[in-house]
Structures are given as structure tokens and as C-alpha cells.
Picture 1 (cartoon, rainbow, N blue to C red):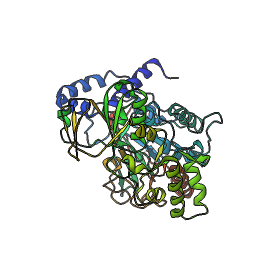
Picture 2 (tube, rainbow, N blue to C red):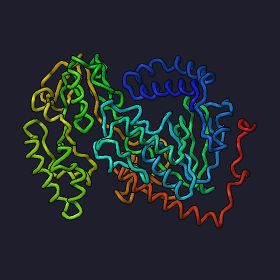
Picture 3 (cartoon, rainbow, N blue to C red):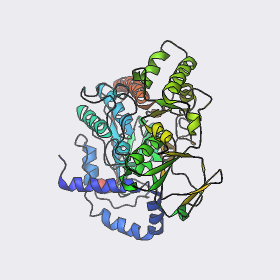
Length: 484
């Protein structure tokens, strides 16, 4: 059980985590950088440290050491030698990989910048969120969902499932350790992973033979730069900071982005008596969540076992037209490629309708074209029309942050932060580098990668155990500041 002091610390970190993606908060922090810098240095000395992993002696020494060096110091305060792999990210992908490794007898260390597992789900999702796919397609390896969970578990149920998963496999991430850099040392043949603590201090270096990037495709919120953002005057909020339509009750709100999140946020706003409009900038496939008595996803997977993908796409579109009508009449033009073929080629996921189309048909949600610029409490669209709005919600998605911290240019693309090799070959790189959760195929894809990674590392682990000796203290001496 966490102490009251630890819980207070975690609550503080949650608030900071939410503000970190708020564009208005970021602008305020820029203007107050000098004052907040002095406050941070004074508060970090008095803040309680987060609880460390009880399974690692090096973790406890990291917590008990005093920080006397600057976060930008070229040499870390503590060096931790990890016999197994280091996993960056404690989301579903990182948890799945750690469990697969543990079952093969390979220990691992998970580094997580937030204060909890699955921080995207716990801190950056709206209240009404449910899994968009049936639970059997969202299970992590070796542990099904409880039988009493509904077909589409709620956000709270999925988080509880992940917590139970971590408990079952005794997975204890090192929280509040953000990875600043990870680089392969060719002279030593090991990865050097440098982390900083919650306040930007407590720098630690982890030295490991294998490095697994599990931060996934949704690590950082994408906040587009819209002309006139400073002039708008009303709240501009990314969906990572949106919780419920209650705060927008009675207000006219523009939702930018027509993916699953944008559609569902519009529906949530309607249910709270707001007046939403939806910006549709591109073509989009909208499919019913269920058809012919089965989930659309499950039916697609079944048909693909017997039929070519283009024929399955045609069947899906015919049934969708019968159930939903012609979406082009609502301002939702379909792409030329079918939904499954488009998903395979570009990773763009079709929208599974949960009631939003009915609201668009009734006029409760209005469709708008792309934005030209923002004005004072008004928005000008590319068709020349200007309309008043009181708030903007950006359902503009997320991106990978791997290029920011991983000093490597072969496996991951610098442009989108995803593996250069397409699925199913993007999970393994050179020099013991792996990737999990970057397949654009959800938890199913992450599970496949996690099992492959565990099998590959197990072979190396057993082979090297016969010929290699453990880390030698002379190779990786601890710095003087961390000595007892």
C-alpha cells in the first residue's frame, strides 16, 4: 500500500502531466520560465520521492541518493547495470513484453516517465471512452478479460485489467523516470539509457544489452498550429485534456478531426447539451460497429481467412451503405481504397460509428470544412464562411516521440518515429534494439511483437549465459556522489 505522502505526490504528478499538453499552459510557462525555474529548484529538494521498485537493489539506491548535479550535467549521478533488457514505456505494449520475457526467465526493467502504468489511458482519455473493438481482440498475452466484463469494456474496466495484469506478472515499472537519451556504445557493446526524474533532476544511466522501445504510436499529442490561435480568446483543448462535455454545456464547440475520437467527442458534447460542429478535412470510412450480428472487426477477420481483401472491403461497404446510408450526403466522403486495404497501406483506421451519424443526420452535429484561420471567438473556413464558436477541441491525434530520445537512425524514421520496415518486420533492429506497439494494429499487433521479442531475447540470453560473465564493477563504476 502506498503511504499518504506517496499518494499526494502522485496526484501532483497527474496534474502536471495533464498541463504538459495544454497549449495555453505551455505559453504561460514560456512567459514565466525564469520564475518557475527558481521555484522548481526549491521545490524539488522538499518533494517526497516516488516509491522505488522493491525487486531491484539499484532502484532503492537511486531513491536514497541525494541529487547535487544539474540535469544537464554530462555525467550521470548513478549508473545501474541491468542484466536483462530495458523497456521504455509502461503502457500495454511494455507490460505485454515484460510478461512475455518473465515467463521465459528473462528479467527486465521498465522505465516510465509518468506516475502510473498506461498513462495515456489513465490521464489523457475522456470519461465515456470504451474499447472500440471487442475485448477478445484487446487482450494482453496469457491473460483474458474477466468473463463478467462487457463486450466493449469501459475505460475504467480496461485500466483495472491492466493493473491486474501487472500484479499477476509482478511487473513493477520505475515511475517518474523519463528517458532523455538512449545510445548504443559500440566500444562496450551495450546501450546507455539516461533518465531524469520528475523534477528534471536525479539523473541515472542504465546500461543494458537489449533496449526495447515501447512508447508506442501515441506518445505525444499532435497540436496543429492554426493561424490566429492567440486571437481566438476561447479555450483550445486537445482531446488528451478533454474529460466530459459537461464543462461545455450550452456552448458552441468546434471539434477538429473526424477519427474515432473526434466522432465520439462530438457525440459526448451532444449528450451534454452542447452544440458541436465537426471539421472534416479529408475522406473517411465510417462503418457500423456491428453488422450481421457480429462486430465489424471480428467479421472482417473471419472473412479475410477465406476471401481476398478487396472482396471483403466491397462486402463491408455494401452492408455499411444499407445500415448507415450514403455518408457522402452528410459531408463524409469515402476514400477510393476500401477500409481494410487503406488500413494496411497507410495505417488509417476506419471510424466505427457508435451513434454520431444519427446526430449528424438529425442536425445536432454539423459538418464543416477545413479551417482557414481563427478570429476573436470566430472561425473562418476555407469555403469563405465565418462562424462564431466559444471553444475548440482538437481531435488531431498523437505521434511517436522515439526520435526525440533514441540516438539511432536506421530502425526508426526521423519523420514519423515509426519503424522503417513495414509490419510484420519492424519489431527488430540492430545491436539488440527492438520495437513494440508501432504496428498501427492495436494491441493485437503489440502482442505479436512482444512474443517475437521475448523469443528472440531468450535465445540470446541462454546462449550468452553459457559464455559471458556478469557485468564487472570495473567496467561501470558508480560515480562518487552515489557512493554510500
